Image 1: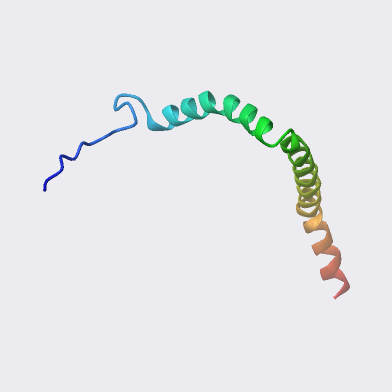
Image 2 (image 1 turned 45 degrees about the vertical axis):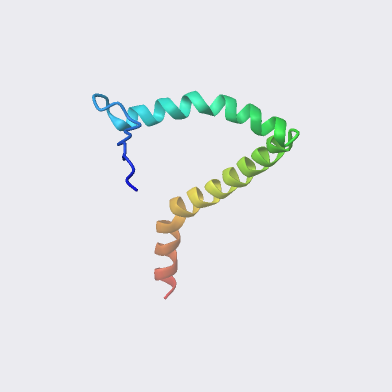
Amino acid sequence: MSYKVERVNPYHPDKPKKEQIIHMFNEIAPGYDKLNGALSLGIDNYWRSDALKVLKNTLTIRYWTLLLAPVISLFWHRRS
């Protein structure tokens, strides 16, 4: 038994693949967000907001750590 194999190219060969993927994502995202909200009965809004708060705090801590690391290092080496 022999099957004919068809080559499928989901991307338009004349356009950059990256742009096509971005366009596809932008087309799908709004519908996905609405469906996610409906299926989760709105719970997704709560965890997204909590996740953003945690991320904001984490990034703030990392920012200040990176900003102050050279100063702390200078004081630490002077004590030694």
